[in-house]
Image 1 (cartoon, rainbow, N blue to C red):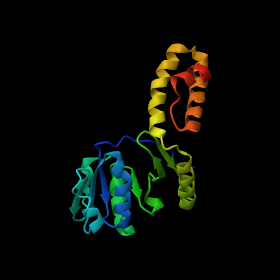
Image 2 (tube, helix red, strand yellow):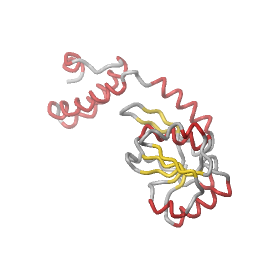
Image 3 (cartoon, rainbow, N blue to C red):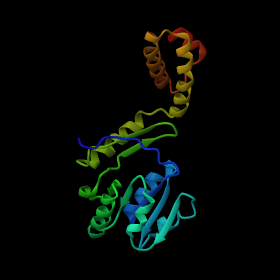
Image 4 (tube, rainbow, N blue to C red):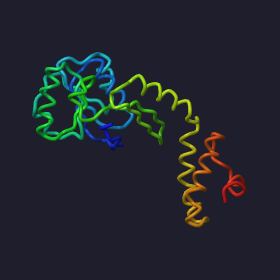
Amino acid sequence: MTHFPLFLDIKDKEILIFGGGEFALQRVKKLFPFSARLRVISEQICEAIHQLENSESVMLEERAFSENDLDRFPPFVIIAEDEEKTARIYKACQKRHIPVNAVDQPKYCDIIFPSVVSTEHLCIGISSGGISPTATVEFKERIEQMIPENMDGILEWMGELRNDINENLPKEKRKRALREAFRKAMERNRPLTSEELQTEIF
């Protein structure tokens, strides 16, 4: 495994996507929930991407790539073009030390996109390092089945519970108590009641 899993805050960051076809659309849809500003640049942009333009998060420019585009210094660039265009854009990004994800072209990838399972507060990325996308999709589906419907409510409760446990339990017992509370909440698909906390955790 050569790719280190890293969660990057891209809220309000401008991400450049070169390409306007189906692969570019897939990347737009994957990034859209993370509140980035997505600028799609391509000589031809498909209708499905045009339909997203009304959103404040998606901006379109129907034109060819220019090295000046990289003056924006995005945190990373996505390329969804043919190999000739991809190689040219990738080379320009390398000069500026801008990481690249090139769709279905691993040799031009500094970063890879995992399969993602997410809720409002939970995000899980799954990758096989490009060896088997089928396996990552299978694991994604299995993990989705494991996540309770009330996952976000449980996580919010856990954030509040951590403060209570820090105030009421000695340091050596805190980690075990938090793990036990989380395990029981997952089993019941809900936060524990105050009575359950007192009798089962504290």
